[in-house]
Amino acid sequence: MAQIQEAELIWKDGKLIPWAEATTHVLTHSLHYGNAVFEGVRAYKTDKGYAIFRLDEHTRRLEISAKLCLIKLPFSFEQIRQAQIDVVAKNRFDQTVYIRPLAYFGYGSMGVSSTNCPVNVIVAAWQWGAYMGEEALRKGIKAKISSWMKPAQFSMMAKAKASANYFNSQMANFEAVDAGYDEAILLDPQGFVAEGPGECLFIVKEGVIITPPNDTSLESITQNSVIEIARSLGYEVRRERIARDQLYAADEAFFTGTAAEVTPISNIDGRIIGKGEMGEITSRLQKAQSTHHVRFREDKRVFNTSIHVTFGSEVNNSIDVMFSEEGFHTLVVANIRLYKGIVRGIGYIGNIL
Image (cartoon, rainbow, N blue to C red; front, side, top):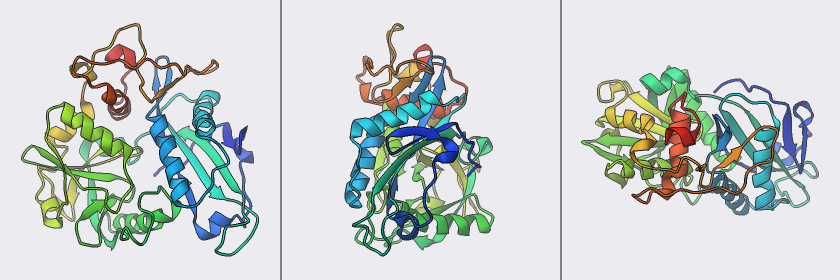
């Protein structure tokens, strides 16, 4: 929700090219018919370079989305993965970076069928901080339940991060903002809470954290990370349907997402949630200190499926994954996510853990 800060280079169809030259024809097929797939990935600045959050998982999900949408990617997993590393390493960034891989049908034919159209792939990266603003991360946002609902799972490819799926999200967001709210909440066809336009939703009731199943929504990498961290902190986390009135009666509520990070919700449809400010559990998830959960050797870098990028040097693809005494090795990347992205101003991950 902020103007793009232009970088120097974009990766397009196998090459890094100047930002201004990454153009496409106005008769590009996906521009007219909406069949494209993309990802949103965060890279967090550390004292030793950038750490890309769950790079492999995001790249794998892009491949799955393309398969579901019948987009045959002309590049391998390794090539697309490396492209995301390159756009961070080759551009001159000094803040949190957002990475956008996109695959779409290009110029070649017109009509519903995309048979004779080439598949183009780009990876862009630019500096992008808090999705809804720094104040939203501190004080929370106002959300409105939308009159638009999530499409049924038999009507759209809900498990694909497809561009066409976000038209529904755009309408819901516009409606909410136009009514004076910050964001929308969409219900599923049965009237239960589904998600936000681009975020997963959690509530807290009597110390229990609840988030809906992904019946009509994307399998969220960040949602999964937050669930794992919450459980490591000792909280009970349930995956179950949430009714509209249950949402109003929650003690706490928050959105999660690669862009949204952990954003508290203080008001829904004019109802104050909890005390009308960030709740204790939301705050703890947002500010969790990794020293309480994961121990590392000082001479090791820890990124699991994240990758460490240093400007002007080769990327270190030999990643040491450290294990805590509690065995939370799968939480390492999630910790980078929360401790680097959500908690602002934290330094090199090896120093704080």
